[in-house]
Image 1 (cartoon, helix red, strand yellow):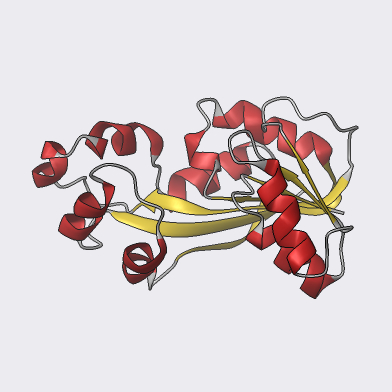
Image 2 (cartoon, rainbow, N blue to C red; image 1 turned 180 degrees about the vertical axis):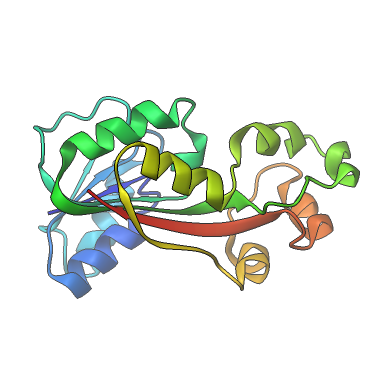
Length: 188
C-alpha cells in the first residue's frame, strides 16, 4: 500500500495505482476529495485510490501501514518538517521508501532582485535546498537512496505550475538561478 501526501487532483495516485498495481491512500487537506476520486475512476482505478482529508502531522493510521509514502509538492509547506517526517516514518514499514518531489532552492543565495515580489518572503521561509532535505532524512535515521535537482525544472515550472499571484513573474525573473525542483528518496 502506498500513501501520497498532497494529492492535489489525484493524478499521481491514479498513475501509481494503475501502473504499479497498488492501492493508494491520498492525504489532502485542501483540495476537493471528490475530484481525486473522480480522476481515479476515470482512469479505471477508482477502487484502488482512497482520498482522505488529513495532513502529515497526525495521520490516522497504525504504525508501519505503508510500503512507501510520497509527497508531491507538499512537504515544503509544512511548518514543522522534522515532526512531520517522524510521523511519516512511523507509518512506513521497515525497509519502506519515503520520498518528496517538490519546489526547492539551489545552494545559491536568493537573488536580491526578487525581493520586489510578494511571494519572496514565503519562498524564503518555505524552500530548502536538496542538501538541507537530505540532512533532515539522515538525521531521522533514513538512508538516502536518491537525491537530485531536476535539470528541466525551470521549463517545467513555466509550462505546468499552478500559479498564485505574482508567482509566474517571480519564476520568470529568477530564470532558474535559485528556485528549482528537487527529489529526495530515503529508505527506513
